[in-house]
Length: 322
Image (cartoon, rainbow, N blue to C red; front, side, top):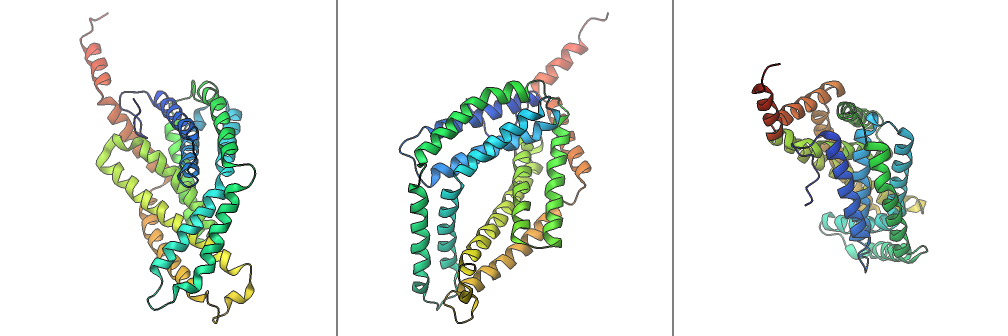
């Protein structure tokens, strides 16, 4: 029976981490074996699995005996996701265009932007049918995950120290907090995208622990998910903006038919960045040390309340004296 992406109260930390890594790899292998491949949902699902596995081993890496294997497997998973990034990115640009058409001011003739949509569709089809084909890419990723499944368990997670939870949470939170400060100190598309990547890791880690105090941590997970979605939209708009302005300088002109689209993009990015500042300042108000201590305290209290822990205490209390 497969559980959701969370640690269970009845299992030791590293036992749970190993279970979750195996579950994510097994689900990815199942999705990679489905034929025919859905060119939209297929790459998206596999990329999500790779990111979840990377989040899991990132959380545990400070307690690993074999850091070299961590670097190798993390790189393998990153490269696997990148093999599908061109197709996924092309699809996201189509979705971004459609979203922009829905929010353009009334009165604008949307037919003027039709060539952009056709160009994006053609680009998606080209990437879909270039060599290597999607089928070959899926088979390569599948082979890599099959090889890595046991190696992650034996060489990385086996014997990993329980203190990795504290250090892993602290490190990921600190990185997200630092990237937030950097993004607002010097606002750039790349800076906000970097913040988004580490918010996503932190979100995954909070999801693992949310049952430790569900009313509090589920709310945090929801807020982090919203923050990651806003940052993702900001990134997509930034990429779309570059597609409009970089190839032809004349598109900067106020007389350009694309100018209303650029104005809409920039207004939306301004709204998004104001929203993520408000959310981020609240979510990352604690110091990394204070946050990690609080999460680990929730975790320890929760574990002590488990039936297994209560049974162990009761047996100890009723054991005959030595």
